Amino acid sequence: MAVTLNELKKNLGETVRARVPLAPYTNFKIGGPAKYLFEARQSEDLVKAVQVANEFKLPFLVLGGASNVLVADKGFTGLVVLVRNSQLKVEGTRVTADAGVKLSFLVQQTVAAGLSGLEPLVAVPGTVGGAVYGNAGIPQVPKGFIGDWVESVSVCREDKIILLKRAECGFAYRQSGFKQTNDVILSATLELQRGDASKSQELIKKYIAARKGQPYHKPSSGCIFMNVPITNADEVRQKFAGEEKLEQFLLRGQLPSSWLIDRAGLKGRTIGGIQVSPDHANYLVNVGNGTAEQVMEMISFIKQQVRDKFGIQLSEEVRYIGF
Ligand SMILES: Cc1cc2nc3c(=O)[nH]c(=O)nc-3n(C[C@H](O)[C@H](O)[C@H](O)COP(=O)(O)OP(=O)(O)OC[C@H]3O[C@@H](n4cnc5c(N)ncnc54)[C@H](O)[C@@H]3O)c2cc1C
Image (cartoon, rainbow, N blue to C red; front, top):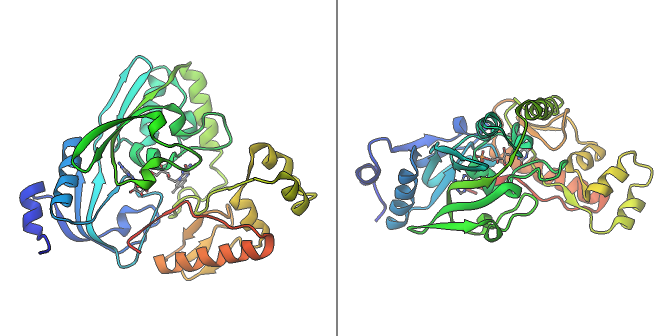
């Protein structure tokens, strides 16, 4: 028999709520209700929520900053756990941060402690857990991804707490092994390097300034597609001969999806309340009452256009929830 709100409250406390709209929690401002919602303020609450969901055979979903998700208009028929644990410990060059710590806060704290390495992450919204899950970062700089600095990750798997070494996390561009498991990330330990706080602050200013041309403060899920790995340089040279930035892309080994979508002439294209940003073509912006259905329609339209024009298949970076 399906678990009731009262049973969940008995197990997780009075703060569990039923039929909670998820749109206000997401950066996209899109998404229907969670059947149940619980905020985990401590790692113990997070573990308990996973155990209770498993015990009652209730599907569960953890969300950090909800900055990289598209929640279906019909919502999620299970328990949504908002990860809000927030412990942060610095010991020498080693930093252990709870999954719920915001990335921007983590960067500022590590810089204040005289440590360097995480500056490229300063303007990536979301939490440590979400960042580890998707190996967040920027490809333009060496060691620009969180996975580059991870020493170990503590996870809750079924009802056990396990410590995974970096080599067991499967980090790659926008990838980690966590995308294939149901592990819930509790915290991550990062090994940073000693730095110079004033130089780090300069870098931080630079990374924040680099966002100026992006629709950073508008409702979106950031980049909707992953960049495209270049597997055959000759073919790419032939296809895009004469393009100004081509050598730069070849050097980086990736074609930016924003560039392809722009070249396909899709900037500014609108479906309902969803628009391909005129400022950065890989951002879909909710310009007013956009729905998940419209985002899906736009994603499929963009993929078809880019495939027809360039023979290139785009892959989504955003995680679909409740579809
Ligand atoms: C304006 C904007 C700019 C962005 N720029 C960048 C960028 O430069 N580089 C980049 O990499 N990303 C970028 N993003 C995407 C996003 O911010 C990152 O992917 C971020 O790391 C997601 O973290 P989150 O806490 O919001 O994750 P969420 O969106 O909450 O979750 C994303 C996925 O991670 C899972 N997850 C979250 N927490 C946990 C946990 N504790 N345990 C297990 N799974 C978990 C969720 O279930 C979900 O599947 C941007 C997004 C926006 C809106």
